[in-house]
Length: 364
Image 1: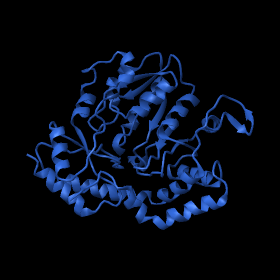
Image 2: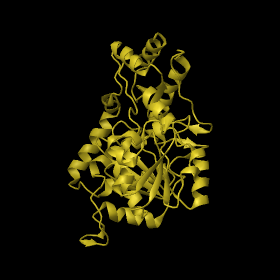
Image 3: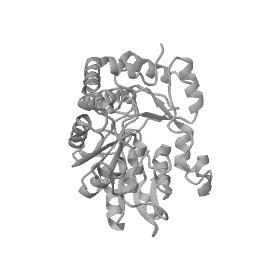
Image 4: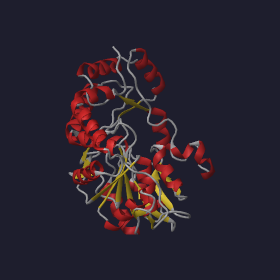
């Protein structure tokens, strides 16, 4: 049996008529940038997130970078971030000429709140927790620390659409929250796309200007902005996936629960969920000290897997100038050496899930 890591075509087939109707509607409208589709999506996504404002941009990285810029974080400033995140989180900090300050993750793959205060300096301006794999960070503690030291909180929610902590959606704890709608995400577009949500009227206005050449009124440029706008086609298609978000999250949770209930192999460590957290399961991460052998074994049996992520950010070549070395963040490095992601996506047949379980349980 062949089991793909993700099969986007299955989701497309499931909602094909809706996608095709939306595509034709946009094409026939004759209006393709900054129109009614975007305005409607922004309103719907703000409502989905229980937030006042949503600003659509063209990627998750742009969402993070623009938010840091709009908050006035730049040269000489520091932003605290977990060492095991995807590189985009850190690139957004560097893009604004600020300095990333790495902290270890916790046992749930999120930013270890117990280690944040030791990393705070007079240069610290923000904490950027990443809800990695779809699991919420310890936002109550992180928010408490941020308030104590007068720091911004920028939530990286790129993998966690619809996740929650104690019944409160992630993305509602920070000064702003940033989302990616890359096609494989819990709410995905048909290309690159992203958004920022906030309750701040001032931040909302700054973000809207920055994404559109620094302009609120055409040809009047109040600040030096950029061009990072969520286009009409992606907005129209995102509205469809947003309408099916709860259904999709529930399907991924059912698949994850099958894995949790069925995988029984002493060589494999199953992921745990933070108390009070509602997981989005963008990724289902196993830990295995024989990770490479396990991945090869699964591939030989037709099961495609991925690693998220094999090189922690502090050891990336592009950050060698920061002076970090192997051993500085042992847990982040351990995750990089042992994590393996199993297939979990909308439309995955249950017989494939059961096949993955049986093959893993036979790994010697």
